[in-house]
Length: 170
Image (cartoon, rainbow, N blue to C red; front, side, top):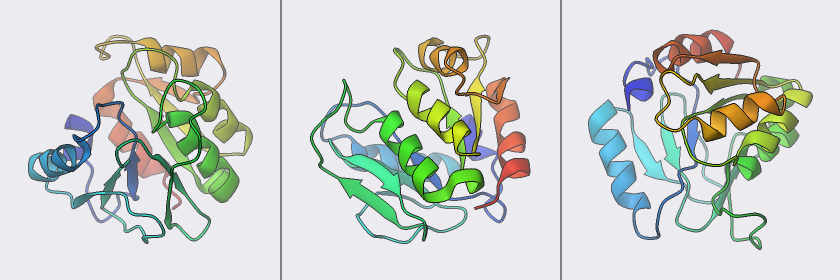
C-alpha cells in the first residue's frame, strides 16, 4: 500500500497487480486498495482500456496481461507453472506488447514467480525494479528476479515510486 499511496495520479502510469491469493478475494482486495490509496482500483476485465492513475487487479484464477494499445488482456489459458495469475505472464505480455516502453516492479513474496518474466521484459528493452531485502517481508521473488537478470535496480520499497515515475513512458 505504501508504494501506491505515494504515487501521484497525474504522473502514475496504469498499474497492473498480480497477487497470489485464494479465489474470491480479488474484488475485496481491489476495494481495499482503492480505499487505502485513493486510486481508482478495479478487478481487470478483458479488453478494457487502462488509464493513468488507475490500478487493475488480476481476476481470480486468470492471467493478466496488456496489449500494445494499453488494453487489458484477461485469460483463462491453461496454467503454466505454479500460479494463475502469474507475474511471469504479465511481464512477458508487457515485453511483447510494450517492449522498451514497459516498466515493471517485483515486490516481496515467496518463490520465484515473475523472475523469468522480468528477465524477458528487460531483454525487450523494458526496465524493472526489485524490492530490496531490507524492506521485503519475504525476499524470494525480488531476489530471484535480481539473480536471473530481471532487475535493473534493487531499491527500498519507498524509493520505488520515484524510480517508477521517473522511468515511466506508458
